[in-house]
Length: 300
Image 1 (spheres, helix red, strand yellow):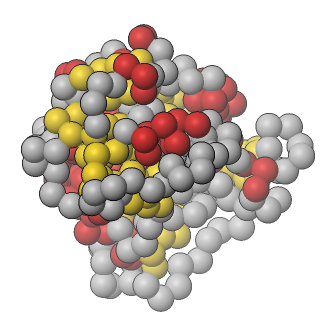
Image 2 (spheres, rainbow, N blue to C red; image 1 turned 45 degrees about the horizontal axis):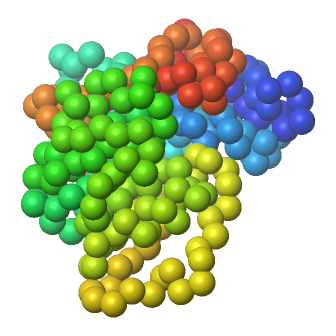
């Protein structure tokens, strides 16, 4: 069976290779994978995976073996779990959601990781109606979905991008303000979905209103964050800094996201699509910040 596997220290750190067929266990399904999504961290930190590991986490395909509890054989599903970049992959039954048979299913492969990250981070901040929500790195996959979900929740959304050209389309997705850099944001905010890390994480903390919440969901900058002495102290209601990374048992939330897409509330941010044999080109575009949203690969 063909799959994209890790090759630390060799070439780009991955290659298309033959691997053994996966075998599902109790509480798992076997999926014939048709499309996969690529996340920034998966190609940036590919060297962290042991040699021979099948890479990837996001996929769409048809169930070929089921446990009788979740989806049935023949169902098309969107799935989240390690080893997705393969012709066949095993996923936990509580990590897949069935797709309607009449849908254009390919786009859903770009949804699981970024969709769950945006949905669960904003949910952890509590009700959003009437609050000011700032999204950094708003042109990326998580950012574009966070903008839409925050707007749907009744927030006033400020989208921050690194360059003017990267703000294209964010107003249409629901941003009330699109600005270049945090320095262009006027006044305090109640919630920050922070995807960049480094100095920007520190600057975002300074912008929180009393009682505000900073949600650290990514570290695209790769730089350390240094908080000045006493910068975490302020009078008034306590502010909070939270990490966000729980993607366990996502079936119900995946189904929620699928329903939002089907209703037109949510647009999946596919910015690059091609064959999985073109992962090199896709990774270069993603790492070079030339993709507005997510990379979608067809397993052909």
